Length: 212
Image (cartoon, rainbow, N blue to C red; front, side, top):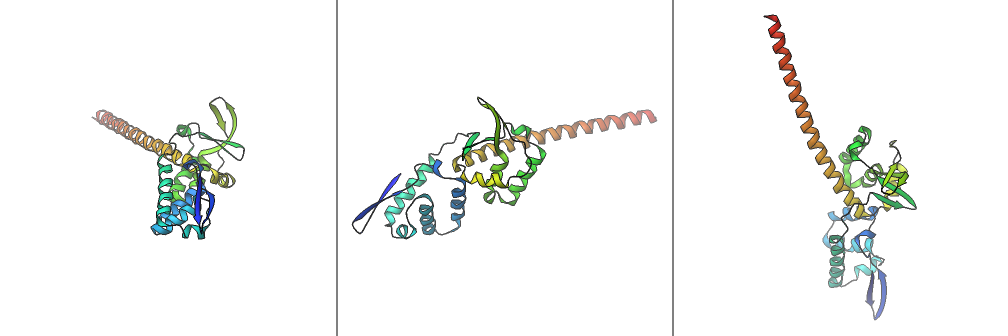
């Protein structure tokens, strides 16, 4: 999107994002960090991150114009695509989200859990690097990704270019999975515990019968 700024009788055009899909994970992380500042500072730094306007010019914008631009950005965020793409492309490399989270390994889940405990907000690229890995084989919608070896340093750097839109959709998908997984697991464990208790009771009863 092009934004025209009139300064001292001269008009100059600057680029603003066209949609929320233009925002990368790296930029989104910086936007999240801005929430601790003042509203005026947050607005100025948001426009600096999401446009090509120089910092000095942003500071000189009339308040009403800055408000209009911020409203446009807010509307873009509201209209973001909520459909999760399980296959993404970064720098010519196709990455696929774990095809079946039900089959996630204990090692993968332990690393994800560690990242979340350490602070998800500052470790988004690491989390995406665990969930998304290079596709080594693909046929139509089916694909196979590289096995997880715990080495995510280089891949995490690549994930900085991932669309913030897709990161958010991935987080929603992952949280939904975890919620269902924990509910099912808890139910399963309770069932196992109940069965064990029944077996224990039966064993004790049999032992009692035998001792009479």
